[in-house]
Length: 132
Image 1: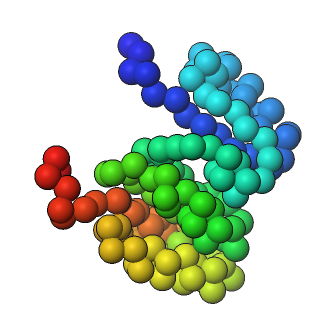
Image 2: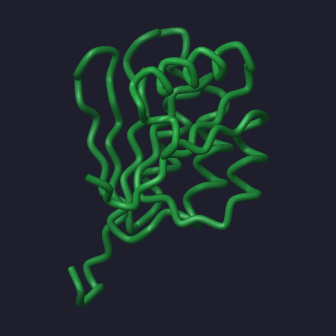
Image 3: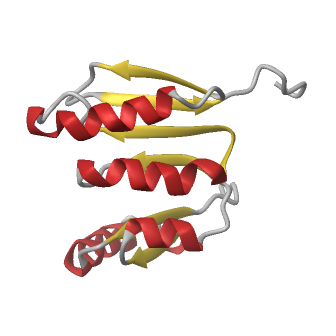
């Protein structure tokens, strides 16, 4: 059954994207995936949005620049899932900066889930939106 959704994948390494494409073709899902190769911040900046669901799973020092690029394009009730918020411990300085930026947005509700290596789940939510 088709629901009209599209998945956008952004990858810097072509060999990783080629592997993902092959797996999605094998699963019969490649036709609903938009494969984009390049720098994530630039790719986000070039996309008009909106984004309904975002998975951040990149180098932790890029979480903040990616967040800053995508936040204005996040749809109402849009969700950001940021992986690796607890481990590896070496990424914690970047994680703290990212989490502070998320907490500073008054229209985001966020929670750190101690699942796996830690997932920060953030939802854009406005109390003054009458449709919610």
